[in-house]
Structure formats: C-alpha cells, structure tokens
Image (tube, rainbow over all chains, first blue to last red; front, side, top):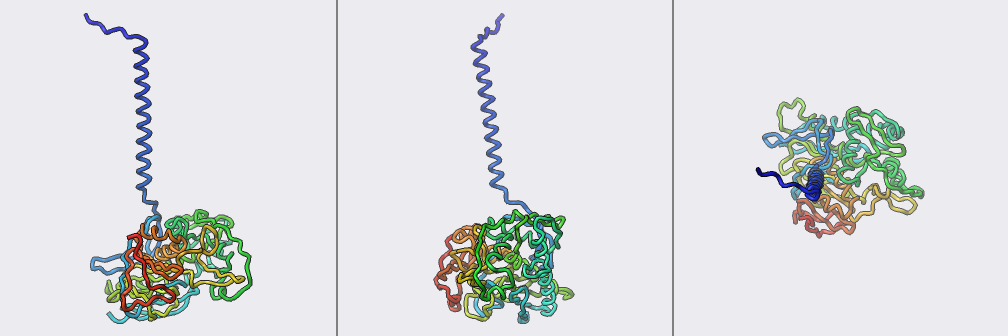
Length: 100
Length: 333
C-alpha cells in the first residue's frame, strides 16, 4: 500500500509562506480595485442636481417654443446647457445688449 | 406676422425694453411690471423694505424667505458653483466697501475719498439655503448681493410671464413672441420674428438699438453682456467699477473689458459673461469647455469670438465705439 510522504517542518513553513503571499496579494489587488473603481466613479460624476424655479422654454413638435410663467425643473448644478450660437445679420436691432 | 411693438421704461434702476411680436403689448407690459415689482421687493439692495435687506440684517439667524428670493439665492449659489466662485452672491460687503452702497444714479456722482479695506469675499458656501423649507441662514458678517444673477433671472421670469400674458385667452397656441431686455440682459420667448430677434452688441445697454455696430440674431435663449466700462465711478481720484474679484474683494483687474455670451437662459448668459471678466485669460478655456458662444473685447478693443459666435456681416459691421475691428479667431477651435 502506498502512503503519503512524510512532510518536514520546512515543508510546512514553505506552505504557510505561500498562503501568506497569496493573502497579501489578494488584499493588495482588492484595494487597488476599490481605488480604481472609486477614481472612475469620481471622474464620471457629473454634479449634483437641485430644484430651481425658472423660466421654462419648451420646444413643440411644430418647432415653436412655449414658455410657462414659472415652473419647477431639476437641473444640474455644475453644467450649463448647450445653446445655438447667434447668427450674424444686418438691419436695425430690436434691442441692444450691454452692461448697465 | 405684424411688426413687433416696443415699449421702453425704467425699473430696478435700469432701462427696460419690451418687444412683442403678434401680441398685446399692454398685457405683456403689465406682466413684466408685476414680475419686476416682485423682484424689487424680494432682492433689491437699495430698498430698505426688501427681503434681502432684512435677510442681511439678520445674518447668523435662520430667516424665512419668499419662493422668489429662494430661487434667486439658489441661482446665485449655482452661478458660484458653475464658475468656481468667480461669480458669487456674497459680495454685498465688498460692494459697500468700494462705495456701491446706493442706487447707481447716486453712486456715480462725485463723492469724497473712501478708505478701501479690501478682503476676499466669504464665498457662497457661507449661505445655507433650504429650498424645501424656504429658510436661509447667512453666516454672520456676510451680505448677499444678487445683482448679477438676479438681473438675468428677472429677465427670464419677465419674458416668460409676458409670453404667458399675450397667449392667455388668445386661443391659438404657438403664436406671439417676446424679447425682454433688462439693462441689456436679453431673454426671448415664444415665436421669433422672421430672421430672429436682432440684437446690437454694445458695451453700454443704453446704446440706441439703431446705432451702427455688430448685429446678431437669436430665435431662442438669451444674450447678456458684462463690462467694466459702464458702471464706473470715482472715489478720491480712483476709478472703481462694479465687477468684484472674489479673491481680493475689490474691482477686478481683467484683460477683458467686455464680455457678451449667448446661453439657454439669461441667468446663465449673465453668469458666464461676468465670470469671463473675472476669470481673465482662463475664461477662454472655461467658455470653450462649455460650448458657450461668446464675444470678448480686451482692454485694447480687440475682439475674440468663441463657441461659434459669428463674424460680423462685412457691410454692416463697424466696430463698437473704441473697439478694434480686428477679430481674433476662436483660440479654442
């Protein structure tokens, strides 16, 4: 009958050392993953939101715009909405922008 | 569409222009007056019985505020957050420190020298606003001034109210349009006239709209302009203006003298225009990152256009007074 080879104390110490290495490596990898995902989450966070009552302009299906006197809408606090650039034109202006 | 009708008057210490396309001008004006009256009572610094004067007087204590003042403070805080504090609602003490402590018609008159004790402003985080409970607590020693964002917000609200007024009972959805200029902060709403709302780009909002200069058109949104060239006054031989640098508490020393910005709302346009002056050279990257169309005039009069702001039409583009006609290409493009 074949029996298992007898292990020496040195074998036991090597096994323990391997287990310790595996434990430490796994811990480091876990920490790195937490840090990495945390950094990605921080970079992709686009700001908090708040309720603000403001003039609301709504574009209808026919391309016209409508506005309610006031409405409550949730907007980002850290971004501005893109807008269409003005176009150059000629003729008498309806109004002048400037400082007051 | 019939020719737009126009009304001009003064309110909140500045000029108001209301232009109505296809609608009842009188009804629109009544709606605008009502909004501006509420604004005056809510956040005029120069009215002893305004809410904001009472709020500033009770700094350190929680104070109940109206929905309008709550919205205006929220807009000021949002402007500060958007601009990294370049536009901040806690400049009240700084404004008083440089002599802007009354309606500007009185401030601009010659007065004796003042001792300037400048200090960085406390910052918008020194204001606690509960939007749900409409309670505000301003840290002791802090004074709110919502002048910049408050004017833009007033333009947005007044334009929306005027549009609602001309459409009320009209029975035909989609007709009628409004342009509302409050001291040069312009908001439009509804259906624009053919070719859009034409806006003269000037440094001073009192410039007649038929004056020569660069004209642009918009169909929606808003355009606002900030400038160090207009609201200026003298104290003790020193020239001061109303755009505060939060880092110093004094009038900002900027490479830009004037900034015009187009945005979805007037409060955003005003915020960005004011921020551009305060940020200085960094404004180019800041505006570019947000895709905001802007026209910046430096102290020598050279114009820089950003974010798709158009070159002027050649035959109709004499420079604004004092401006260099040479336009720089968009450095962010």
